[in-house]
Length: 103
Image (tube, rainbow, N blue to C red):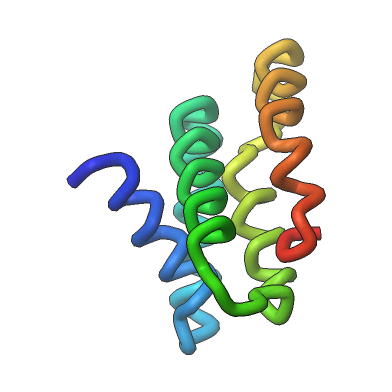
């Protein structure tokens, strides 16, 4: 499975699942991965969100809170994370975080 497929699967589970528990568990998994592997997790989720938001034709602003929660979970911002790495990852997400379907 490629990174793009893995990211798309996580986005689908975190955003599109009709089951609240599946969405919650997926967000916890993303956050756990982001704590252990911050750069790669953020990269995978950011790319999957960008692909999703640029390829869909319908208005997805109704899913705004779910996109926002997914992006936030992927940052894995903990006190243990190196400050420079934290700032770099936040900077990479700045434009995506201001997309109308996310913020």
